[in-house]
Image 1 (spheres, rainbow, N blue to C red):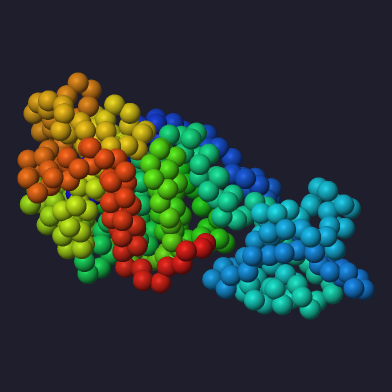
Image 2: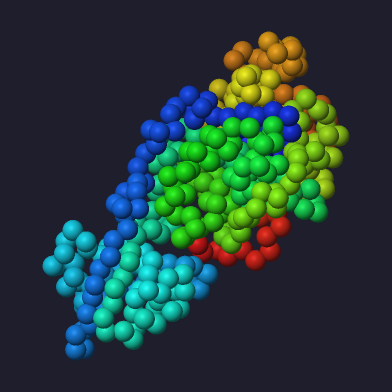
Length: 390
């Protein structure tokens, strides 16, 4: 993440990658189930309703024109409640979403009109398909797999390729053959991070959310789950459909872990970040670790790599860091079982950066506030018409 977020779970360099060890060491086949069932057969069902006489449909739905589904807010009685009493195995529930009404799908205004005007209704629905269920499924995944750091890194790399002119969060990394898919900086993300999210994406994308929005939301849920701030996510990022729409390489876009303060500013300045932003974003190194077989660096920045607090800044200032060459011959700094990279140390060697390191080491709330501002800016690069509600 941020200025010194190179070769990390949150922001590796252009020639390296690091993933959350728990995610790498665990089978992607043993993922927690998603709400409503892991397969389409389990979670998609159909009902046939007839509005006889003055009987109402009995469904309150959450209409928003940008959506392609109608989430059910409440079953209020009427035909729907009668159906539930007669067909408990196919009962319509709050949190399910209507996918199709009498052959109309994808057009929520048209679907709603059919519900209002047609007497005979055939509805296709999906169980547990709304924002609350999505967040719950992400929380379960993060808790089960301890994969918060790599999900932060996924969102960061999707958005961080912005160089002030082009590149934006658009989920190009998921498309094989793209520069973003095969970048050394992104190694592990297509296989591990996207793999971890696959079951959730299969259910919610594109019915409720885009991949790019999912990655942003997953990172923010992870930050909160690891004890960090509750960061609002806005929605409306559009997934690219061709690998050619992604950026070709990481040069000038993503930072390297063995560089100095000038490199940090050269990478993040064109993105519109000031020194304060760069240091605040770098604090995301408080979670995650480097893996020598992937990045050439080895170790975690802090003692608790699953806790999103200001330990990174405290350790930078208070620990005695000894420079060494690791088993791969890469320079890094070590104190006990924790490490810092050259770009991390640049934050205390550069006096302008160090001002903010001291500030955040002394005041975690101040770091949270500054991190949130810079992080939201990063996640929203190139997107000017995002909305607050999914």
